[in-house]
Image (cartoon, rainbow, N blue to C red; front, side, top):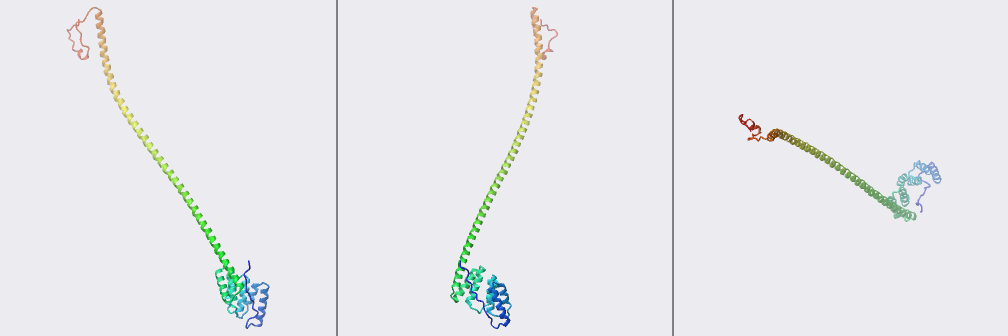
Length: 270
């Protein structure tokens, strides 16, 4: 790629310069040719004479020293020299500062005053650099957009994962609650069953108590009957014994307790 073309003209004299100034100008020129650009600019700035040529030469020395901002300040005070050349060098300074729109503007102004191949070349170079910069900017913006989209997707995945985790936790909590409710229900049912069993046992015990009372009463009656049966059996044996002795009773009396006291003293069974 062709390097940026620079139009530099180092002035050989200034109007109304004194003898000392001419000596300083010569030293500045020698320093410039020796590529001691900072020294050259300093020598030129020490001259008291005011001249567009002085500022233009200072601008050229600063430009070569890569102090482009200071060079622009010097070129702005160099009005009076060849305007196309001044605008060309201002364009170069903006180009080096990567302010391409301003560089293109000054190149075009220079060409409007005078056709110059170097200025045309620099103009095309600035336009291509601008196009490349815009393309790189678009690529960078696209990369940033893709990165943002990816970050959004990643964030969404994280959120979805977190939501799924929260849902699982909620389900687990609901399940735990249901288990607790079931346990409470089982406890209540067990308590009800226990209460019912206690109640049934109490009812059964009451029935057993009543049955025992009834059985006790029946037992007393049976004992009473058993006593009567014994008496009857005894009387029957006595009668059988009498019969064996050949005697048959002409009358039998009742053995019930209620009739015992009704036997006549004068009654004779045989």
